[in-house]
Length: 510
Ligand SMILES: O=P(O)(O)OC[C@H]1O[C@H](OP(=O)(O)OP(=O)(O)O)[C@H](O)[C@@H]1O
Ligand SMILES: NC(=O)CC[C@H](N)C(=O)O
Ligand SMILES: [Mg+2]
Image (cartoon, rainbow, N blue to C red; front, top):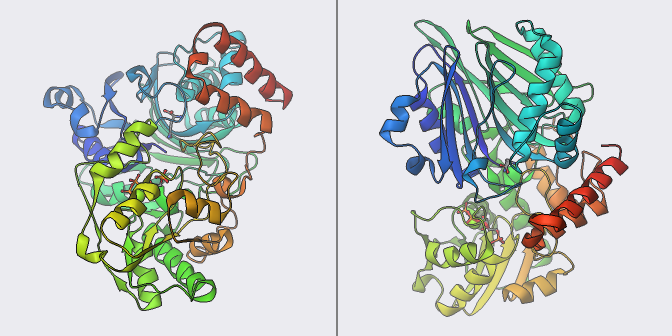
């Protein structure tokens, strides 16, 4: 999950894009970038780091123009450390296209090979997003046939992207001399929402990963971009939209509601905050039903994301809710940091216990999820060190047992605490006296009750069902071997691996 934003205005957009990226910072802390369009010229600045560190005043001054796109990166593919993979990406033909991507392509290797062999396009990074940009550029060439692009041709090119790309993609792009294009994959796995506002000179539009950016920039929410749909705002400020996928159906990622999104966002008609309250309610029901023998003195959230669930859980059970852990506001989200050593160190730097809330008490710690167990292991120990008698742990999400291949960086089963372990074994691993997980059906109900129109969700990290239908055991094994053998990224080994991936992709008709 990265954060993306695009704005078409009647006045300079550099500050708006910067402010929008700031409120999407929770979606990616590794790199940030902005491209603005001034006539046919793009101005770009991107680098590794947080938004506030990447953009200096001189960079902002250079970002001229009344339209632009921005990106905050949380890497899932390619090289996390490489600033060459910061987004947006640029390609000079046709016309000049820039693109920012949230998600992960599951057939990127096959596409890269096809681009080189069939489309005569070279992609020099290992980023799947640069592959996506080149597929879009190629499709734009195909439909344009050296003429100026119009909405119809642009939408036809997006249909071509849908035909070729597999996986998850929410995209913002700009075509030089034309306008702003945004689209969402045919399952709508990653979120994308549109806003507008009336200015003295006419309508202005924006698209963003989350509604919180639309609120913060004082635009009004129009609606979510539908799965498979594309939005195009031309140079004259005219709004166009079209369904570009032959088959399309909502399968939004349920982990957005569990952890990724900000609680003050509304995604696909569901308030993230309210869904978290409901997760707390159903967890409370489960405790009342199956765990009534636990003598709980106090409920303590693990800041930040679990707070609404923990609060509602305590309310439902008539228990005290206390802030037993204080969060250092200058440390970012630990789950989306690269590397286990950094994540582990940061939990201790980020959270500290308040002794009186633990001393001699039986505490129920509530977190939104347990993924690698980095947070829960440390936190249970901190509760014990602070004098807790018994430490119980509740997770507002079910066990995470399967890799995510759609834009969340958890590609290997080995790193997931719950893979191959039952609840009792997981409780032992994190050192808890009892462990209560949300049931998958209750999680889905908690979200769906807020928008009954959402019939399906991508819940693959909980149930192992991959909606795109192209995820084989061989694919997962290869992704894991790349992750577990970083040495294989160089030289012959990587070539062998690349070949294997192509065979896997080819074998399934990709
Ligand atoms: O089992 P783990 O691998 O530790 O992952 C799960 C933890 O990571 C996240 O917290 P994070 O610190 O990223 O962000 P938050 O402040 O939004 O809760 C999440 O809220 C859990 O606390
Ligand atoms: N989390 C994401 O959306 C990642 C986007 C892209 N796959 C990258 O690695 O940069
Ligand atoms: Mg957390």
